[in-house]
Amino acid sequence: MKNLYVLLVLSLILVLSCNQGNDTLSTDNMTSVADNALDKLVEKYTNFELTTDISKLSANEKKMIPILIEIADLMDEVFWMEAYGDKKAFLDGLKDGNERTFGMINYGPWDRLGNNKPWLDGVGEKPAGANYYPADMTKEEFEAAELEGKDDLYTLIRRDADGKLITVPYHQAFKKQHTRAAELLKEAAALAEDEGLKKYLTLRAEALLTDDYQPSDMAWLDMKSNHIDFVVGPIETYEDQLFGYKATHEAYVLVKDMEWSKRLEKYAAFLPDLQKGLPVPDKYKQETPGSDTELNAYDVIYYAGDCNSGSKTIAINLPNDEEVQLAKGTRRLQLKNAMQAKFDKILIPIADELIDPSQRKHITFDAFFSNTMFHEVAHGLGIKNTINGKGPVRRALREHASALEEGKADMLGLYMIKQLHESGEISGDLNDYYVTFMAGIFRSVRFGASSAHGKANMIRFNFFDEMGAFAKDQKTGKYTVNFDKFEEAMNALSEKILTLQGDGDYKGVGQLVYTKGKIGEALQADLDMLAAKGIPVDVVFEQGVEVLGI
Image (cartoon, rainbow, N blue to C red; front, side, top):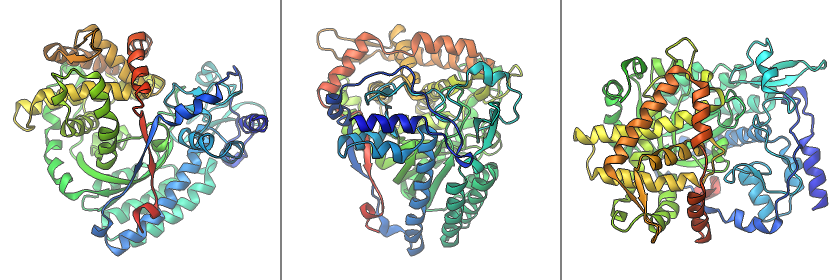
């Protein structure tokens, strides 16, 4: 292990070249994690094979898939640099087996499902700003710097030879990977039979070379009849927990389920009316959701980068660009096969342990799918720009923006389900959605409270607990949903979140996160019990051309 620690320290203090950024990661506050815990850490994940029926694809579409996977792997390379640093130095220092497996899952020495605690001896705390900022930079220094583009999504912050902060655009910092990915995107575009897909891939190639992603985002929303879809580039900002400014590289290769997508088409049309009915004063719902919103279902066949680290995404809502959202809307992608894996392997066993038998019948895959889907749809509701001149909500709330946005989507997703159920647009028992949502809280809370989703989960759990939305039988340890109070809590938290967003109330959101974004002792005992029962926390994927049989 001694050689491992040497390599870890070397990799953490590595000074990257100008083309790849030039900063270091902190090795302060060294801590120790017992080696004998590694087996249990790996057991938090269960394997799942990502496949789809490729017989429905054309010859050209089958040829595209290996190219798209190669591009995805380039995004994976960049994510390693953003999240950690030198991938090779890190992995070369690990033993084969569980060390290497867990290192690959977490993209570094910090346990993403364990509040980012180090899982290797001698490794310091994970920097809040990952590798986007100089390790020695303070928030105050950043805020005082008169530096154009410092809060741009697509710039790294580095120091020049004199120690002054500078920006390095992504297309320069990651030139090698972006240039090769652009070449491959053009190859894929030449094979594309769908004109919308061809245009999108061509514009996305240009975006990687210029950091101008808006034209390709617009083109992505314009394509309607494509069987193959590809989400690629710097997209989400979760990895930047210092400010929430910097976009992180990732990729999904997807095959659309045309039949399921057809079933979902109608729901997007309800967004404008649902916006008007939000449980908040009118000034917080004056924006009109984009008219080009789509809902589609997919089999995902490859994950890479940010979306493949720690807990795996099962639904997507993009683009994130507020201007694009207001002008055209978004697309919501439901990753059906990944969703089914989490339902069968994780949610059902959790419900068996924690949901009262009298309500166990309300746990259904249809409700799980709908809760997840309307969570993504609900990102389009509410407000994108503050009402008092503080600019976009994302910038006003900084590092808290993502957590609050995820919390909003959870609450407004339930609001949508209730409204659509009352109007007869959704069938089944409304209580199915509520009880399945409750079980889903326990599933999601196990991701820890360090991520945006984790903070949102804890805020919701503690808020609902205080309002009596559920009760725990102290003898059996089972939970029961109090349906009337559940709806009251849903509306109250929705109003609170929308108000905080509209006001751009950074201090208020910070207080909410501080007071309610924590895992209490009683809940931790429940989570420990689930772990002791051997119920996995998340999935890891067996994926690639060999799995697909291409």
